[in-house]
Length: 431
Image (cartoon, rainbow, N blue to C red; front, side, top):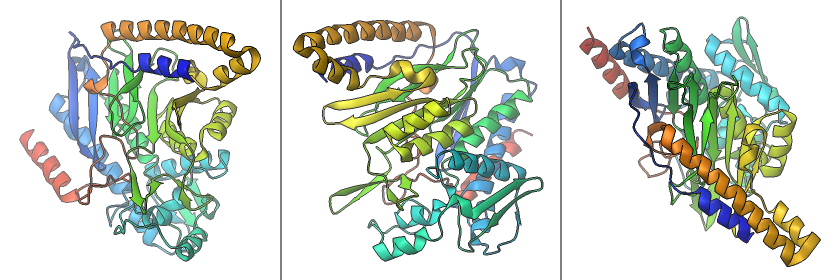
């Protein structure tokens, strides 16, 4: 394992950011209990002004929040959750689209992604319900599990509607909504001739186009809450048409401890409890941010080995980082397979050829690491990494807002009064 530790150390050199000469319009603001950043390369090509773009982005994100935030009592999702009707319940088209995709991923993962876990999220102190800082009682868990299950939820797109088979069923879209919102921002800006765009919402990234031929880049952070170290830099929108979004989900920021036990915010629907495996961080690159967001959460539930198996079956681009006693083990598939660095090669070398074989393997890994490091340095010289910081994980990333008790909220949340006031003021100032 010593060789892996050296390789990771070399790749963890912080990535410096260099200023671009070309003009980039940057829009920022609060949304969904976190913050967003939008960058538009060559904004002079837009058919709207920068002020109008800001208002439109704020309005769009506000609409998504009003649809999908469980923290807003009158949001579309809250009204659906409060209803005990077993008939078709009409919802907006975007809402139905998000639910339909979540259900598709649920089917492919045997329920690893299950948006009906809202009661469990609340019971484990990670939702809008009052927090106790204590795990739920066993009897409570058993009762809640009778209401959980993606198969208890039906969705149709035309006309858009949802239907429960259990009157107490409730859903939570925090595992997918920010990704959907990022996609919608890119789509909306494209309608106004902004073709080269970078959108980040609480750690979820969607890109389109490039920066005068330079790729948009994001950094994947080492899964360590005590450090903001960039583990690697990955380019998106490289011309292939499929690498345009990235989402990262991890357990290293959003958790609580009780009686010396650490409870992750990621709930396994099969057990009704927080996951206990060693997987610390998952990054997924996909064509849409909604897809990347959903699959990152599913992988976080599945764990490294099962996650890798399903990622290969579904032809996904996934990077899985697991904790080990002497560092991190990294598995990768698709376009992220090149970043993999695990114990397997070292263990095989030791079994086959003993100490001499392991030494040879160490030199090989060091050689690969040197090349990778050189590539990162070259990228640093010609590109600009997003936001002058690494992209932290979704659901508990650096950008997520803290609650009054100091904990970090994973679900969508906001202060509606402040958000509306700010948006109205901007609209008034633009007149």
